[in-house]
Image 1 (cartoon, rainbow, N blue to C red):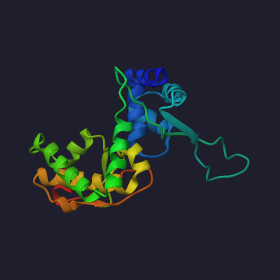
Image 2 (image 1 turned 135 degrees about the horizontal axis):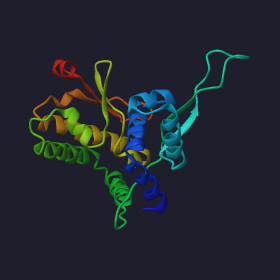
Image 3 (image 1 turned 45 degrees about the vertical axis):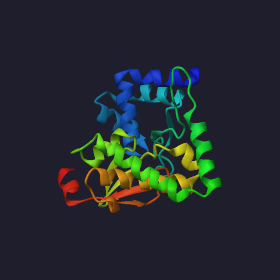
Image 4 (image 1 turned 60 degrees about the vertical axis):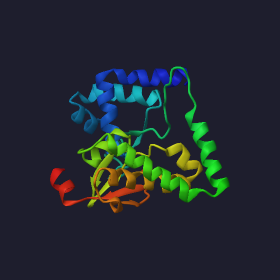
Length: 218
């Protein structure tokens, strides 16, 4: 944990900044000041101030939206914000689980134990489901950091909780992630085959086919 991480995350203690951050993060793309302000219920000027503070802290990134109209009279490009690609974490005292997980992933690869790893991940998903009986899978995935959202008849996952490891060992981590999600579905009494590998840039590699119940509930 660095002091920068602690200071950056401390900014989210302010309810307005936290609300604006959540708005930008939940949209999964560029969000303008006016859009963020309206969603958070604050003025555009106040939103711009807090959004820029979040950019300074490295929690958001900013840019400018391409103007459809070119040349004189087109006006200034609109400033937009998106969630920063980096990660922030706080642990007291400092811990380093990522390094150990990376070593264990290397061990799996060296031993050629990918199938066994998937089997264990599937079992882990079923165990997680054990403490969430009767809950919809969307809620459980949300609590695990996947940030699910509905699109085109699928339940997509905006965030990969294992992003750092997936960058190092994409084939292993994505296959284990799929097995984990399938085990979770099975443990919840749902169809494991709803979960499939469906990678998208900047998102989790797994998506779920929505059921009629999901669509009616959403």
